[in-house]
Image (cartoon, rainbow, N blue to C red; front, side):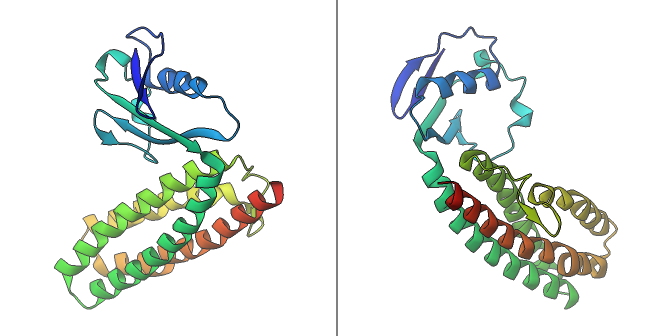
Length: 206
């Protein structure tokens, strides 16, 4: 099977039934230089970098038309990305506050548009944070926040989002605004602090 890595075509020597995880494992072996790893992945023309790949676990190589991979100094890029994530978290918190206010003012059309954008931001931040942790090689189980491993922080996001989706479905916009303001925003304010702890842990290890 052929893939494109940094603009060059490589034959991985895999059969057509090899799964996407097996293919990516083989890609990782192509360049084993210290600190060099995957920084961007495009599958059939779509950029899937930082996205959830769990639904690709059973995808066979025979169904992949084009796989493009870029590599680079992963720890360095991941460290830089923490700065970007901190800035993104701050802007997301600001947008969430505006969304809650719009719901409370009865500006439903505007609020729903803001709400959808913030949900996209929440998903991007969650997946990108996971990718950064993997690439920095730090043990987030050993980095405590609020007396618990920092790795547990984003796991609290699911129940909050479930409550938000339920409130939205019932058209309970007051409750939705409350959940955004009193549950979701504090989570991402804490996430900014956790990102700083991850950076400090990486700097101490380097």
